[in-house]
Length: 198
Image (tube, rainbow, N blue to C red; front, side):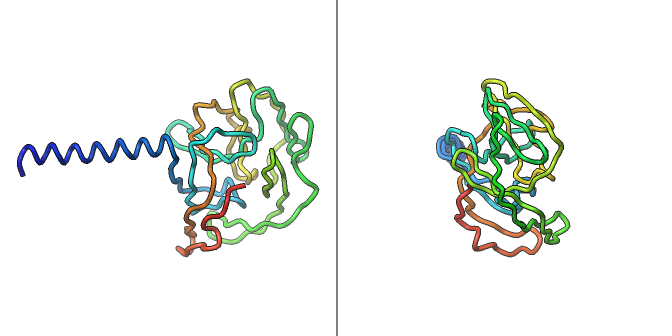
């Protein structure tokens, strides 16, 4: 192989890498979910499309945690007061949880099906189920930051532990499931593919 061919190969590799970086920055990117912190709406083994759109209240977002990432729902923004009281979420004193309770199925880390209490909630037009849990708390959100919670509040480590996140930490908005493979049974979850993320 000639030196000219080597440089051409390097040029192709660099061009592909730059194009991929531009697509990721402008359009979005896939994200494989490794935890049950957003169950029951997002499951371990789901691959989501994360769009480079402006995040808003109620959106499910990818957050840079400094060396790792997490997936969370924005429940409060700068200036708002977020609190959990008796396992109910209140934003500026108003409950976002409905009175509708149901049972939701969550796959445990040990690959067993667990049926846990779920509650329906609505934030900014997004209607979703969550698993209540955690201690009571209250926080006023600093301007320019976002308060994020996992929908599975029993398992998720989120802003209740480490506080609100800066806008620069949000890497995109999860819009839909593009592939789903059960990590326990290596089976495709066909019904989840192309499901919109509420």
